[in-house]
Length: 455
Image (tube, rainbow, N blue to C red):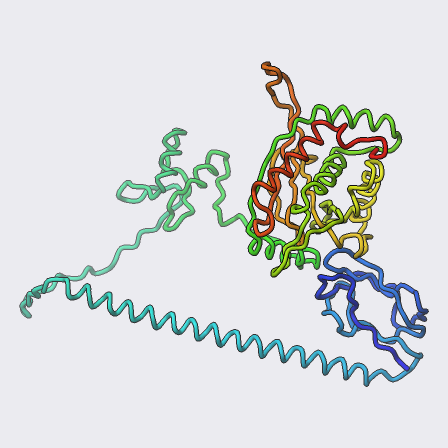
């Protein structure tokens, strides 16, 4: 009997999937466990295995095309088997869904049209009242009657037409030009009558002057506007949806603190010499400091659930990783219990798998706190949008060479600014500030967090 395969649920936030690649063609033999296709979800591109043995009889979705969850993806059965019943059933289901969407769309359109009509009627009433008020305030005007015998002015035999030519001044000696164009031409000593005007009615604009200066005498019409449009990826759709919901539903506030990184830099250099060929990054040090601080400040390691607040007793830290399509946030689990060497290895592996689109759902689920680091791009300070379901996210800037005051003297220093974005429904200002002070204390005095077992 032929088996129907539907678009699978490969992510908790997935609403549709895109077939990136088919690994089997229609007519190929398929065994249970064989890779049928690569499915692009909102988080990654994942391999989809067959659960059935047989022959691939039908592909419902072409490569590069999207399909909703649970819609028909493929059919596997015996060679030559009749699958018309399955196709008809799938077609009927798709038609029902389409009709339901159209009904909802019509209802929405009717509501919007009704709303627009009411607004229009209200506006017309206001305009009528306003017009009546103005008429009542204006004095009566006298209208003088002209004699019917008054001779009208003779009309000219013809209406002369003036042709505007590029670079030529009008007959009255004036050149139509914007004030900015006139000023720029005067500053540069340019005879504005020699400049080709591309604005309305030959009006000379600032761009025309700049084009004249650079020697580009061709009219602006010779330039062609162009653009490229690409479909929105599943990942970008989810980023847009989740972060918009976070930004507009969670009341964000931001706390920034400066960290003296001199001791952290010395500690990192010593650690990397001790554990060669392994390496730890500054981001690994920040992650470790945050993990330990979250133990001391459980309110920061929490989630808003509408009618209750969840205080997580475990510390799972998400690390934002930039990929071509957007951003992924793999999770370092139980980060407070792991040594730096393990944290560094996990983050490097996650980054590699993220760029190769090999992350699995368990890799990005369960975060209780998130770190976003743009320091490697030279960004000295920024704010980040909270990554649901977290209550906070830490934005990490670059380590900057900065003069600092130590023992009453100005000396060279290395300062890193970090900004904590907080959900005010869960975390108050004092709570966030205390957390940042603990993080700073750990980074400025690494010995507080770097026992032998922590390395």
